[in-house]
Length: 319
Length: 266
Image (cartoon, rainbow over all chains, first blue to last red; front, side):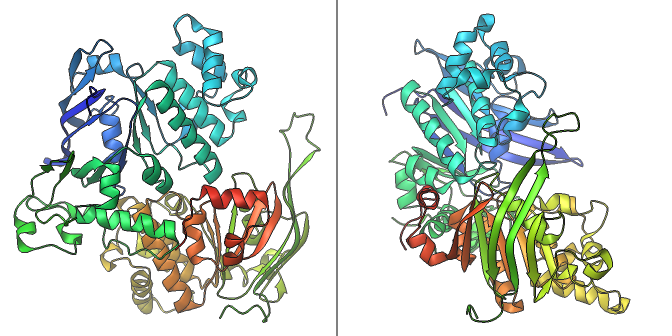
C-alpha cells in the first residue's frame, strides 16, 4: 500500500457521563482508509458502530465527549489534521470532504421540496445540469422525471439512491455509510451495492460502511474492522480476516455469517454486548469459549502483526 | 410431522385484498389497488411457510387479511377447519388468540409504561388464579430465553432481541398455535438473528407451532421453512417445497432472488 490514506483516524474516544459515572463508548479507535477502498465495520448492536460513524462528522449529541483526531489527505498530498472536538473545523468538512448516508433514506430527504431542488440547494450555482448528471450517476435512467418528484413518490430503493446523490453532491472523497440497505429488499439491496462499487471504482471514492450484508462483506470489502463493546478487537485485510480470524469474537461472528450463506444452522454467541462492561480484563471474556483467568484480570493490548493486521486478545487463534 | 396428506391447518383460497387508491380529493378514488391477487395456498400444522417477495409485493397485506386486520375483497381463509373470514367480532373471539402476529418493530408493539411481567401476564387466561400468574410468566420468560430478573423491567431497558423475545412470550401466553412473523429479524443484527432463529426452531418443535414467516431474505428463512411462497406484484408466482424451489426455481424472478441471496451449496 504505497498510496496515501485518504483518511486516518487516531485515538478516537467517545464517552458519556451517566449519573456521575464516566462510561466509555468507543475506546482509542485508530484506522486508516485508502482511496477507492471499501472498509467494512462489523459487530453486534451496541458495539459502537453507529457512534463511530457519527463521531467522525461531529453528529453526536453534545452530551457525548469526543477526543482524538483525524488526518485528511488533500489532493496535493498535503495533510490536514483536525481535532475531533473542533466542531467548527468538522463542520467545514462534513458533507464536503466526508459524505454521509444513513439507514433511513426517508429521514434524509425533505418532504416538502422536490428531489431536484434539494440537490440544487447543495450544488454551487444550483446547477440543474449537474443535478441531472448526479441522478444519472446513481442509476436513474430518466433523471428529469425523478428531478421533479417528491420524497413520498419514491420507493425505498429510489429514495436511498436520491440520498446517495445528495451525499455525492458535495463531491466527497470519503463516504460514510451506516447500514444503507437494511430497509431495502434483497434485489434493491444488490442494485444499491453494485452502484456503490461502481462509484468506488470509477471515482476512487473511499467507503467506510457498517454492514451486515454477508455477500457485500465477503465479496467486496477490502478491509474489515471488528468492533466489540467500543474496542477494535481485530482489523485487517478482509481476505486474511475472513480466512483466518484471530479473535474469538471475529471467529464466532464470521461463523454465523458463513453458516447462513451455506444454509446451515448457526451457533449463536451466548449473551449480549451489554453484559460486557468490565473495568478490567477483556470485554469479551464473559462470552468467550477460550477465556482464561488472565482474560478477566488484564486488559489485552491491541497488537499489530506484520501483515497489516491487529488483534486485541491474550490468546489469538492460530492460523 | 411434515406430511402433506393430513388436513391443512391454514388454508387460503383465491384470496383478494384491495385498497382504495388516492385520497379523498383524488379523481381516481374509485380505482382499486389490488395488493393480493388470487392467492391460494395451505399449510399443515407445525409447518413453516416462508412468504418472500420484494417490498410492495403484497406479503404484509396477505398477513393482515389472515389476521383479520383488513377485510379481503374475495376468497376464503380456513383455519383449523373453520372459515374465519366473515366472522363477527363475538364469534371470532375464541379463534383470534390462536393466530398471533409478531412484527418487525417489536419496540412499537410493547406498551412503554408496562413492565415485561405485566405485558406477558395480561395475555394469560383470566381463569388462572393470580397466585399462579407470576410463576406462569416466569416459565414463559425462561422458555423464550429471558432472564427472570427482567420481570420488573420496562421495554426501554431491553435490547431489540430481548423485546422480540417478550413479544414471543406474550403470543405464547394467549395460547397461539400459529404465529405470523412479519420480517421479525430485519431490524436485528446477524448474531441476534441467529439467536432468534434457534429460539423459533426450539419453540416450533416443543410446542407444535405453525409459522408464516414473511421476509425478503432467503438466506435466513430457508433454514426454518418447509414451504415457500414467492409473491410478486400481489400474485403468487411460485409455491412449494423449499428445497425443491431453491434448487430448481421455475420463474426468472425466483431465480434472480436465489442468485441475489448469494446462496452457496452446503
